[in-house]
Image (cartoon, rainbow, N blue to C red; front, side):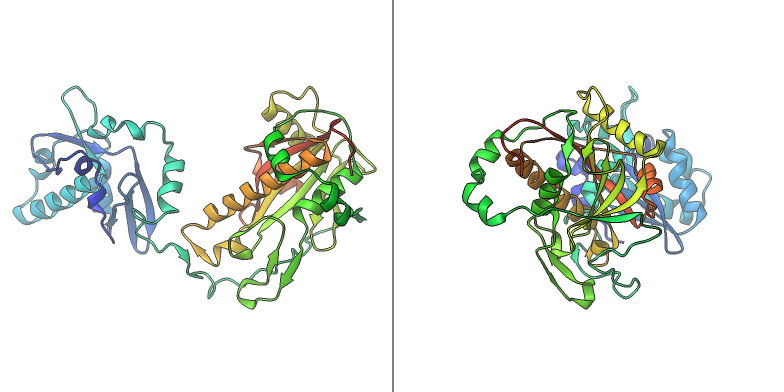
Length: 380
């Protein structure tokens, strides 16, 4: 295991951490313990230090410091050889940030690092493991799963029953190029806006065409094909799928749909039901400003394997970056179409999987947003 002791929080404060038998230490609050190979690994989310725990005794020793303890008390029952091994182990844990010293007033040494106060454990783990530096694992396009997992086709195959397919209207792009808003105007006037006015199917169709359609595709066996859309994607893999929950969409039955970016159609997957209403209700609650359920809910999901086969450590990071580019694209195009749009930061991935019959770990919802019509000029 690679040890990154140069990033010890104590070292960053100008002190080299030294283990003392008579002082108290406890397990850091920023440690993750996970099974790996034939044992366990303890990893500090502060330093990136990984300590291999090859047997149950080493796991018990580390966990014994969940409550403050003195090394002298832990070493006293041991013979000289075993005590030396344990002392060395505890010293590495201290240098690597796995354990922290406890002062007489009960505060931990790591508590003095103010910049840690704003981190939740899962966010800190995600930040550390998706970047180079304190991450001991390879980062980048290593294709580390290519020999274990087959490539997924760029075009999503249908699973289960389909209620129908709805062809969508296409905007006149040549006319729009001559008459559309300037990029500067769209950027400057872009806002999250809230409305419960019905949305027309034509406006939804034009939004999807301009934001989400496939503009070019290329066969590439290693990746299952790569795509071009109007927004960028890491490695041109475009793992994102867009689902539509229609509530008040003129010309479209209430229900759940998936947008096919190749054919520019909506694939009708689900009729209106209580679970779908709850998806809409969650969106309404998240906005805090809607007086009723949103007219149309767009749910962005990812087929993770499209990205995880290629990118190691930063795959989820790459997916979220693509979500951001899609969000901005939807915002800007909605502004020019006169649509009220509000991006939502969370959602119920379990309910999404039930409604649209997807595997939670293979294709799961990332983020959501709602759309409604508003009066900003001509739509279409």
